[in-house]
Image (cartoon, rainbow, N blue to C red; front, side, top):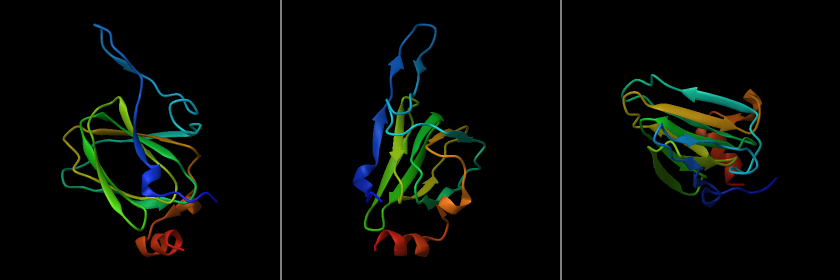
Length: 138
């Protein structure tokens, strides 16, 4: 299995087609992002002060986009942590496998879109930080 680190994660600028009638942004799997898209989901109506995430994936790749509003994502590879602030719908945060993520600081009305490389599979998750650390640092 390829070893991923925090440096493998990055903000990706997506195409932005500007028009007086409104802007358009699109994402093509394998072209704009380094994986094919098999699942899409979104978070919304997140209460003030709530946190989301709090897990890592063994194999899943994701692109996380603030479609509306803003929020923060803290990424952790078991050695270092980095905070990202997402607030533009034409930027996405690429999160590779074996990176713990926590999301907070959701603005009112924020909508978080997630594009994922695989279908939902509970066995792909690390839900306990200690289990993730044990796997990430070996």
